[in-house]
Length: 163
Ligand code: HEC
Ligand code: HEC
Ligand code: HEC
Ligand code: HEC
Image (spheres, rainbow, N blue to C red):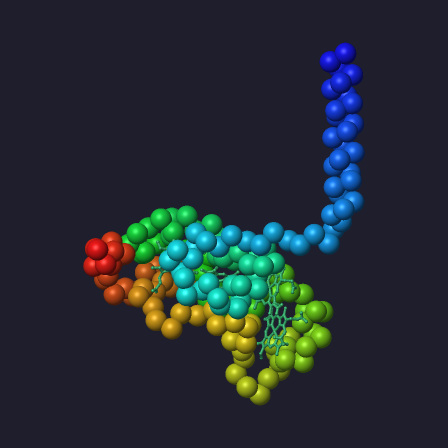
C-alpha cells in the first residue's frame, strides 16, 4: 500500500514538474548575479554601466575578476583580486563571450576588428561603461600582481577614524 501511494505521489510530482516547465519555457529570464559582497567595498561600481548590464545578464564581478576571496577578506586591502586586466588583455577577455560576427554589425567596432584605425587603438572599456576608478589608493602590477604603490592607509585605520 505504502508503495502504491508513494508511486502515485511520484507521478503527481512529475506531472506538476512538467506543467511547471510548460508554463515556464526557456524564455525565463536569467538569474541576475549577486554582486553585493564586492559592492560592500566597491560601492562606486553599483550604478556603473558595464557592471550593471552584465549583472542583469547573470555575469557578476566574480565571473570576470574571479572569486577573489583573499582580496575581499584582506582588511588592509593589499592582496590583489584573482583576475586583473592589463589594457592589452581587455579585448581578448571581452571577445571570449562577444563574438566578432555580432560585433561586426556595429560600425563602431570596425577599427578594432580590422586593426585599421587612424586614431590610437581603443579598448572595449574605453567606449563601454565607466569602469575605471578616478582615484586609486593602491596599485598592483596587473601582470606580476606585485603591489607597486600604496598610500600606506589601511582599512582598519579608516574604520578607526569613523568611530
Ligand atoms: C574589504 C574591502 C574589499 C572587498 C570586499 C573587495 N575589494 Fe576589491 N579592492 C579593494 C581595495 C582597497 C582596492 C584598491 C582600491 C584603490 O586603489 O583605492 C581594490 C581593488 C580591486 C580591483 C582593481 C584591481 C586592478 O586592476 O588594479 C578589482 C578588479 C577588485 N578590487 C575586484 C574585487 C572583486 C571582484 C570583489 C568581490 C569578489 C572585491 N574586489 C571585493 C577592497 C575590497
Ligand atoms: C564583463 C567583465 C567585468 C565585469 C562583470 C566586472 N569587471 Fe571590473 N574590470 C573588467 C575589465 C576588463 C577591467 C579593466 C578596465 C580598464 O582598464 O579599462 C576591470 C577593471 C576593474 C577595476 C579597476 C579599475 C581601475 O581603475 O583600474 C575594478 C576596481 C573593478 N574592475 C571592479 C569590479 C567590480 C566591483 C565589479 C562588479 C560590481 C566588476 N569589476 C565587474 C571587467 C569586468
Ligand atoms: C562571461 C561572458 C561575458 C564576458 C566575459 C563579457 N560579456 Fe558583455 N555581455 C554578456 C552577456 C550574457 C550580455 C547580455 C546579453 C547580450 O546583450 O549579449 C552582455 C552584454 C554586453 C553589452 C550590451 C549591454 C547592453 O547595452 O545591453 C555590452 C556593451 C558588453 N556586454 C560589453 C562587454 C565588454 C566591454 C566586455 C569586456 C570587459 C564584456 N562585455 C565581457 C556576457 C559577457
Ligand atoms: C570606438 C568605440 C567602441 C569600442 C572600442 C567598442 N565598442 Fe562596442 N559598441 C560601440 C557602439 C557605439 C555601439 C552601439 C551603441 C551601443 O549599443 O552602445 C556598440 C555596441 C556594442 C554591443 C551591443 C551590440 C548589440 O547590438 O547588442 C556589444 C555587445 C559591444 N558593443 C561589445 C564590445 C566589445 C566586446 C568590444 C571590445 C572587443 C567593444 N564593444 C568595443 C562602440 C565601441
